[in-house]
Image (cartoon, rainbow, N blue to C red; front, side, top):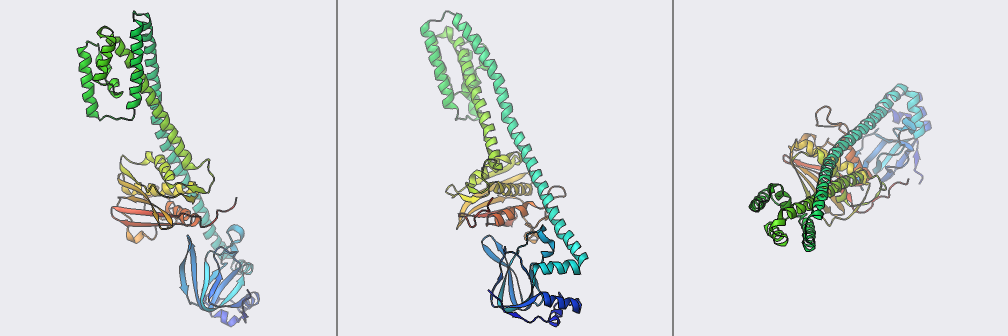
Length: 481
């Protein structure tokens, strides 16, 4: 669409604060290279389009807006002559994306002085070379520093998670090693006992009965695996078993009781063993069955330990998304659980984690690795705020057309005077050396810019909630490649 072009006057340009110090020759150059255009109410340019022009308001009224998620948020409304917008970073060249970083709309008939981006870039470099160098240093230096610190923060987070994962893996690995060593001893004892049984004068029907009891003991161990006795109840049962074994004259019977009780073998079962094998063979049968029970219990322990290791490796894989496409439909609960497992080593013993999940929650299109980074940052902030004790609540729900993920903590809260600044880059309330001030900024950009969602905080002392909203349906196709 062709815009009406009107006469450009150097005298009018001189009345604008932006041009008031220019020479007549410079003002003349502007009028030769640029133009004055009139816009009726409506869009002037849109955010994300190639930045082709630099605009200066001569008269009228305009609104500047930025896209946040799927909404356009008004950031400025003005009628001040001389305000400028558009390709004002053209002098930085291809070192920054040359696109409009906002949308401009005229709200009443307005006139603009319009200068092509390449002409504005040449003007800046030729007329104000020192200022260009200073601006380049300020803008690009801050950008480099932000990238470097962001990379450092990611490395620190990775190191912390690696240390936590190593600690978590060490416990089940050590338990599996201990159980394997004990199992080797029990198997050796069983071989020795089996030799004695084979050499002894045991009748065939007695051996058959013993094998039947052994099979029953194995089945009982399997049936009792998911049953957990309280310490007092377990102690009472052990005392009863120890007394019975002592009455039967079993030497050092107290060594047998704990395993029998853990396996769910009670006094009635022991009496059945006595009835089956007789008093003379009771001790040998019980010790043989004890080897069997201990072997099964140790194999259960090894299975539990290796399962724990497998779960941790799976959580690490899920957390890092090593085998997934960058953008896919995800179950938010899977991501939350993997992050909580990865961070379990950092959660103090006096912090209670509450999972308040809406199990009917739909899946959402997302970049799962990046969302895991958001969860990590928000959980880490909550733990830091609670200083070692409190309650961390992770809640999910459906909120209109969005999935809501909320992280609540019982810390002192975010003071109202800094609440509007916590998502700013480099702003941190942590002591020097403990925070870079980029965690919440990175989280905001991932949620808002990458996922077209929303991230905000609600806080009073004892109840701080960071609320993440993610659209249930794709609002923008992911970039190619």
